[in-house]
Image 1 (tube, one colour):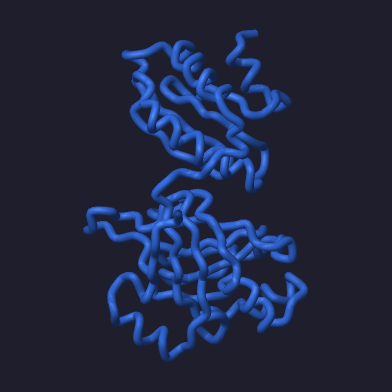
Image 2 (cartoon, helix red, strand yellow):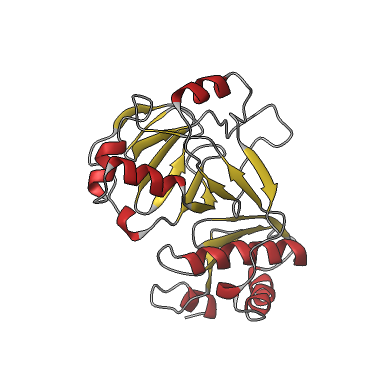
Length: 253
């Protein structure tokens, strides 16, 4: 068994490097989501981007992994793997600083009402009153852990343990753009209109995906968000004020 094959075994220690197809490597920092594993994936990708290893053409992160796509005509997979292993061994990535240039977003959000009709259901599942649930979410500062499922759509977390609630067993037929949903200690802010198994607890006027803009995806992995509570009247006004929907951001220092 080759060294690469050994690293792909399910019982191999973390972090570990695996092969994905003919032109991919994946560096995994955990089996399940945790703050340190997500931190490590984000920090390691930033380090790879700075190091610019020969042949690496693209990098991205999932919740707990960094994926690298390389040009197999320029570099052998084992040679790149050795270079990536050296970088991996150079630092405790679980305690590494998060990438520079991240932003803190404050996004006005209506909790409950007919705009977000599953707040009461989600609050009951979390063992909270509806008011307490809204206050807790609105005061939580959560990290964009990854972008996925739909263009520019963030998975954010982690929330307090009370929010380790399951997804629904049946799908909600439709949530609108800007819907804030919850499950498994995470929030998802929807960039498109779609069915979902996540409970719809808040509604924003924020547009995540802007295909005609220079930066089509507004939020980036590592950014942080506070979904500040607002009222229905303010929300209706913010809908008319442009795609930011009243959101403001600042660089995290």
